[in-house]
Image (cartoon, rainbow, N blue to C red; front, side, top):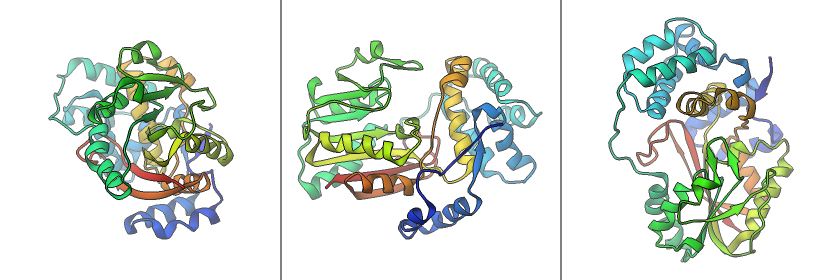
Length: 331
C-alpha cells in the first residue's frame, strides 16, 4: 500500500525557524506533526473513510467524525445527521462503497437550501482588500486568479471591483475534471493558458492582485525549486505594489489530509459520478502554513497578514475544512 507524507518540502530545521510565528494553539499540532513524521493513507488505500470513522469508534475521539459529517452535509447540501451517522458507522466498507452509498443518500434525501453565506470573493473584497488598500494606497486595475476553476470567483471579485472583462484574468489548464474553457468562456473574463507545469506567459509588472484559492495543493510538485519557480513567475507578473492572496487548506494531521481527499472525492465520485477519473487523475500535496511561508519568503515576497480559520467560520463562508489565509507583498 502506498502512503504519502504530509510534510516533505523543507528540512525540519528550516521549518522550526518559523514555529514561533504560529498561534499558541497551533504549536502543539505542529510539534506532533514533526515528532510523528506523519504519513497518511492516500486515496488508493481506499481506507480513508474507515480510518476517520475509527478515530471515533475505536479511539473515542469525536472531532474528525464530526468534521467528516460536516463536510458531507455541506458538499451534498443535505442535513439528515442521524441517518448519515448511522450509515457511516453501521459497518466497515471501502471508500468506493461509501461513495456509492452516499450517492444513494444524495438521491433519497431532500436538498437543503442553506442561509446566505458570504462568498470567498466577498470576503476578499470586504475584509482583506481594505486592509491592503488603506495601508499601501494601491489602486487595483487588473486581477489574476490562478487555478480559476470555472471562473466564477474571479468574475464575482471583478464585478465587486467594477472591473471590465479585460481586467479580469483567469489562468488554468484547459481542462481538469469538469472544469474547462467551454464553461469559462460564458463569463466576462479573459482566459490565459497555463501549462501543465504551471508556467504563465504574461506582461511583466502588469497585475495588481493575484489570487490562489485552494489551488497550490493541486500543483503536486516534488521539489521546493518547482514551487519557488512558479511563485517567482507570478512575482514577475505583479506590479511593484502588487499582492498575492493565498487561501489554502490548513493541514497539520493525517486526518486533515484524508478529510480533504474525501471532500474532493465527494465532488467527483458522488456529485459528478466520476469514480474512474477520480482514482486515475486526482493528485494533491498539502502544504502546511509554515511551508507556504517558506516558499513565499524564498520567492521574493514578504508576509503582510495571515489568519487561521477553523472549519466553516471564515467570514461565514461555506468552507467545510480548516483553512489558512496569507497575504503576501512583492518586495
